[in-house]
Image (cartoon, rainbow, N blue to C red; front, side, top):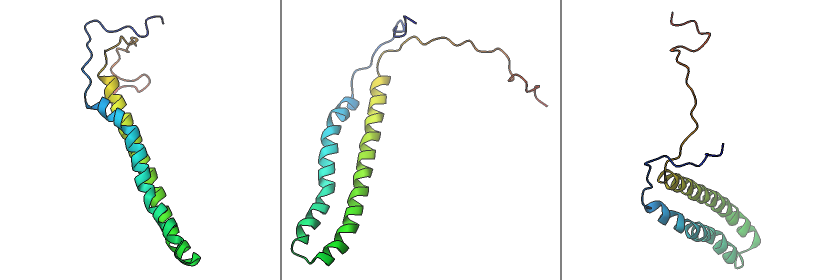
Length: 116
């Protein structure tokens, strides 16, 4: 239990690569992309000040639905890229000693009775 994070002898870490650059840029991509995707809804609202209320409702609802769906897609893509970059970052680190799990020497699972 005390040796959970013991490095494997002879293991080495790989140098940082594109994953660090990606992880550093993701907050800016998230904010800038969200603002750009929200821009059509803001423009429709500003243009709605010039149009009658009934026309605004007919135009703004489909735009709002499209903007919300694109925002959710954008956030999902950014999260997926962040998870992938983090996995690469962790995998480039040093190897650690894992707990040994003894394997059964039997060729067939217990109770299956063998091949028929």
